Length: 510
Image (tube, rainbow, N blue to C red; front, side, top):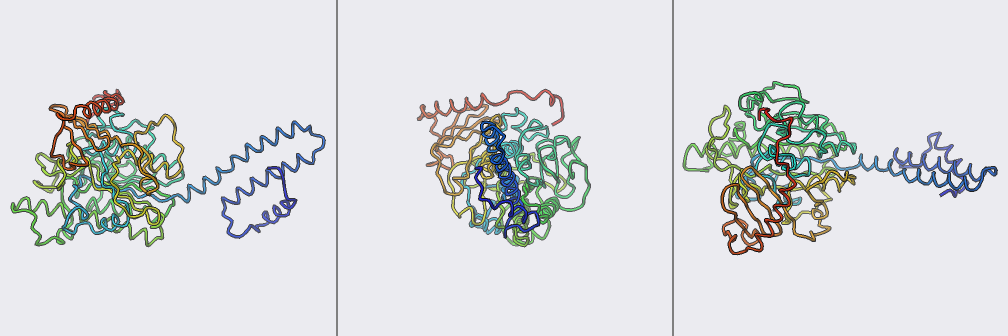
């Protein structure tokens, strides 16, 4: 390492004067400066005849160690050159509410992104909103944080200081933005600004009225905010959230992470008239009330699709499209029956999403509640394919970490696995994926093609998802060995969950 060519001093003088080699980046110049310092020190060692040889050797070793730290400058360059990440989450979107699962011609913008990207045909989430968001943000199953994280609670879902996707990316030099529904803690001190986001906008609570932006009634009613400070604005919630997201994209603070959890298409269900008019004359149901509610739902879906189309247009217009990974998912399956649902000021919606042909809906452990529409799209990096490998929301944290070379702490204990090699087609899973889902109403576990559902009250059910994707044939009584194996796997996961509410949350309103 200490061998020089005798010409680095003239080069150093020229570089000091500004005559850097062509196409030399600032980060490369830092590396050159560090190398030059090492070479100068080495030369001094060689010319110092009075210094004992052993001391020279020790100093050379120290310099070698320091030189080994030089890649930290290169890592800074890699952070800056890392992809932008646009992560969009729809709310309560049903399996058949998107064009690539339905024949109505819905969601043309999403359809194009799916066609040009990786369709995630077996993408699992939790059966209700808050737990899925906790899984996405932490890479851990939500039960690890306590029973409150398994419900759509307004309590703090994760302990403060939890390493989140946002805080991880922020530590790697990313600008981090959130625009939309947080629902991981309804107090400002539990908000996204305390979980790694530089900027946050939308609601701290769960679903809000699309026009008044209010959340139900009570202590968390006024939830619209900017960076944790209460805010009053006029306009449709989806339009406002999308406009904020567009501003973040157009800032071009590369690299950036933009998390856009829409309130749509959660109840209360409504959309601006311009989106309803797109489906004038389309008959959805014989019952006039259900016809109206499905029209509002479809219009809301069309609105989300249009906003995502605007995101893509902005990326292309600003020259960021080929440098941006787009991920899309829903937080859970759709609601097909809205009995006792929160309808806000827009009125009742007796028919909502459609999950056919999957069995079940939101709040159930069947496929219709936990298997959702999802895809990943990155031009030039992800080739178009339909991926049938099961994955879960907890996988996104370790997947993005691996993509960026993030060195995780050993104590993070992610439940997810790195799926990047599978997404790119570079590898196939060597072992059956085990997916664990805990909910207030019971538990399920899938290993390979077998899925066991154990309700809190009632008999367990066993399905072979490969042969019976619509869960029509329960074979729990005829496959005792499979049931035993899955129960053991389930028990191992349950043992890792926290059974009690954190003491500082006891007695607080949910």
